Image (cartoon, rainbow, N blue to C red; front, side, top):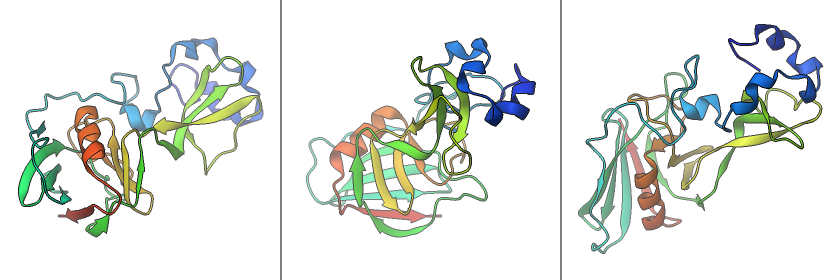
Length: 205
């Protein structure tokens, strides 16, 4: 567990079983630090944003034509087109420095409504589902005895590049992800519903 409440556990976490973890974690709600915008304390859940959203809208249900998505990394906006008509605009949070979202021309190659991360998530105690580590990295640390790994929610997932996709996520107001494109839940749902495998995705700076 990486927590200000239990610094000693940090040093011995991997050497003990889940049943030995501090009970103060029992009120955790299943949110991964990375997805929840964790900054020393839990302030927002993974669907929320700390700033008002005066950018996002959808007005494309009546439109027809082939879908296309354009992502602008500088503006931190995603645009959905049907034919040559703009159907909607969404605020986004893309990859942070060192983990930037790759620019280029892509296509949606996978849709997964209830996708969860295979890399970032939480370790939970078997039998109780109590979170004992809310900042687990599945590929970099072993699952402790008596625990299991649960991936962070990345619902309404549209994959378009290797390990990179659009999905519902926390938007702090700047680029903060590990490469994916986070969107408000309502907009992620609209993009997911209206995009198909093969829909072009243009990522520009």
